[in-house]
Amino acid sequence: MSDFAANNNQLVRYQLTIPAMTAPDALAATRSLLQQQGLVVDRIEPGEAVVASATGTEPDWENLKGVLQTAGYPITHSTTLDEGEEAQR
Image 1: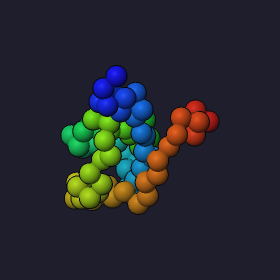
Image 2: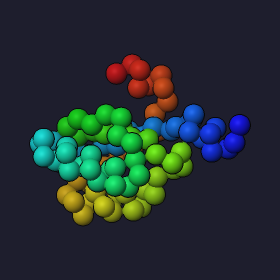
Image 3: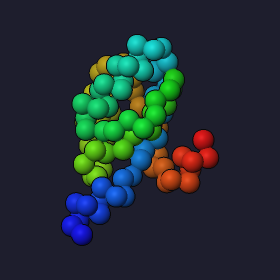
């Protein structure tokens, strides 16, 4: 098995806290911005998004935070989720 295949089987998911993202248009805009940054959006709801990197590598946090900050949706906290944490939701 190649390293690339191994990485794709072990996607790391991240929970992002985005308090300014509350209205339906903000959710849609944020989803689009996250996808443009190469992220797969698992879940998005007011104030929070759960994403994974489409490439199996860690996101470019500095760029991602800058893009969302410029759009008016700053990330105030991010954390890594394991499968057990997400399954409890």
